[in-house]
Length: 465
Image (cartoon, rainbow, N blue to C red):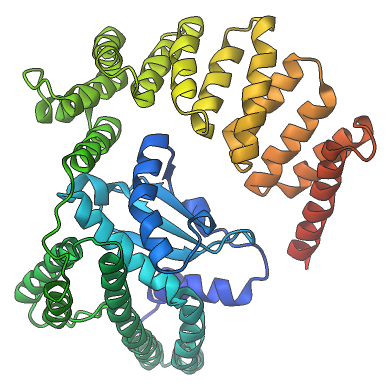
């Protein structure tokens, strides 16, 4: 009799583990906690410049959809229901999608497809479909466990595998229909915004070729997929693209240049410095090459070369806030926060509604440890956190700034906000209570402390059940 280990069972059930947890748990969604998110004002704004017109064409409010950049080198993007009640959906874009695709139109095509999922309400329908697919899987699991307990290890495992395969097949059939619908809706939005659908066709055509190569390499292995069949999908997309009057619209030179800049920034930030310097050698004097080299030198670290490249960029494009941001960052990392304040201030002056830039400026101001810098830092943090109240680093810096200013109540409230944002509700309750005792009763900050106490307490009670 063969012995089946717990690890083997866990591996078999891995496909449905997230679903089981989601169906049985009454706690808050924590899916994003395992995703490595990259924050960058320039890249986020470029992605929004691609996505916001598409969302409007779909009849959706761009303010209700957040875009997150994921530290993952693969070509992928996905939409999901947001765990925050104030938002509708989130779109996650892998860094690899930007770094490996060839044009803005290709990225826009993928975003249009994901918007099709959002507008079609596919995330909500996925839950119902998963629940339905769970039935054969759970039946197989029950039968299999019963057989294994009775001594029929192989028969029990066979029942479990058959149940899993039936569930996968059922859900993937449903998912393939949704993917085809998202393609169609995405092409509709591209046409409405006078953009070519060719980029989407090119990306999914690449996927289809890769799938065909896998079938040639492994002809006897069935490949389950939650996407439409390669040739079928490409034929349908080709008809939609060719039927659009905007099929041959090209990305403007400005948009292409902007795309190359964020590609270079990601390469400089994520790739090995020597790889970056090989891809962007010193003989290449383009803006994107120098930007990539500046970040590569920064990470080596070779701060003097990083400073030289960043200074030349800021001098040539004095109205580019991101080059001033980089220059400020280099100064701070060189333990020269006083020198970093000027460049960071210029970046904020050029882009005053960018919370991340203000938070970086405030951090540099506090790093000087000069009392005169505390109030400006607090002022910048207030503005930034009003725009982006879930920024954990911002709340950390705010707690430090208020502590330096001798404002214990606001330091405690900022710490409560930080703990609340990361889901540490017990600590959030503690610091909110400390803040509430010291804040003027009825004031907006006192009311916020009261709200944190109430919501954190409810969340704790829910988790204890």
